[in-house]
Amino acid sequence: MIYSQVTRLPVLGDILKGKHQFMDQYLSGKRPSFSNKRKKINFTLVLILSGMIIAGLWFANEVYKPDGKFEPLFLATPTATRIANSYLQEAQAYFDAGKIYDPNDRDAIDAYRDALEQNPKDAETRAELARILTYSSSLLSTHEERVARLSDARQEIAQAVEDAPDSSNVQAIRALVLDWSATSVATSQEERQDWLAEAEQAATLAINLDPNNGLALAFYAEVLLDQNQLGQAREHAQLAVEQASELMDTHRVYGTVMETYGEYRFAIEEYKKAAAITPNLTFLYIRIGVVYRALKVYEKALEYFDMAVTINQTNGVQDPLPYIAIAKTYVRDGEFFVAALNAEKAVEFDPYNANTYGQLGDIYVRSRNYEGAVPVLKCAVEGCTAAENEVGGVAVEGLDLINVEVAYYYARYGSVLAALSRPGQNYCPHALEILGRLEDVYGEDPTLMSIVAENEAICSLLIESNPNP
Image (cartoon, rainbow, N blue to C red):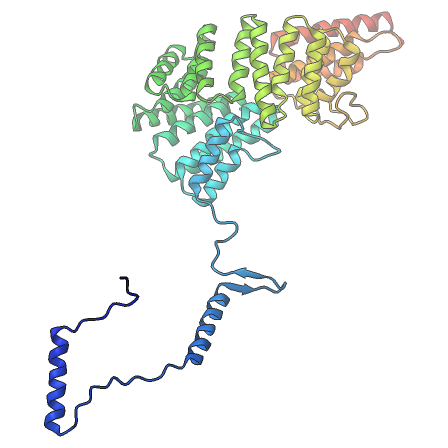
């Protein structure tokens, strides 16, 4: 039988207590009483109190809002603060996906910046941001954008060094940032040498702090390469791969060294290893394609450029660089029409980029489309209004004459103007003005000066034959 209540049996202490109470009553003359008197329970009061408790609990869990709605109390904040580590995981995911920099959407750079807002003194994370900023500069089309991006990288790595001067990784990445600044955006030979010297010091310190740091060895090899110390560069690059074969950076640098040596197939092998580690970084595929193009294996070159296009499409990134690479490959193969189509696609993606107009103009010149080249090269060299821009349809600011690539746009533009000059349509005065600016800045460059001399001769003949145009 199962009972709903178990009867409590008396224990020895209770028996003795009862006995003493009985004796006390007996000795005092009181009649012992064995009755068990209890107060009556007020069930009405119990119900009222119970109701009040339930109502209180309900109200404690609900908060009245002005709009007449109730919101549960003690719920978690709808937008809980994320921890820095979650941002780092997000940044790594973006990096692995190849989404280093996307001006129209969230990317790895954004995630690293958010992580640093949570922990501003995390020098390793700040150094990693500087590394990503440096690599992302290769995805930018204009010189001005690259200057700004690498300046940002230098600021970030300077702060990281201040917070953790004895970190081998921080010093190694400082070497990378300064080396790329020296070779990409240095405004003078003196500035280039200064940055390379600082990069070498940072790489040396990084290796001294940790002789087995593959990242430090790799970036030191890159600095040595840019200082034309090819033997030492190769030695350190090979050692870097042996120490840290799991890093994309070591294989990328080793591939760069082998490419400089002219060992193209070895370079391709290393670039492919780097791409296998981080399979969505478009600049690696572009580099592989460029080396295949140097080998005149155009089909393979186009295959890897197309991989970069596909990755960008997947990530929603409208990057003109793979299309420019494709266009240049078709030019090498004599397919000028297809080359122009791809260059025009690059302009469509980045219509304000004067450098892209320069690339397109060069393709037009190579395909002997001189009339089409003039307005495009004008946008690149002098700038153009939206009405003058027959391809992009927007106003474009011309490029400053600050590097050799732009210098060749000037040479192309001046040459086309001279070539199209004839009696009654004399562009030579304008051509000579453009070529004169080129001579002022690059008067010591024999190749460019031969172009200037050739076109000055063309214009001189025209002037001689038509003294009174």
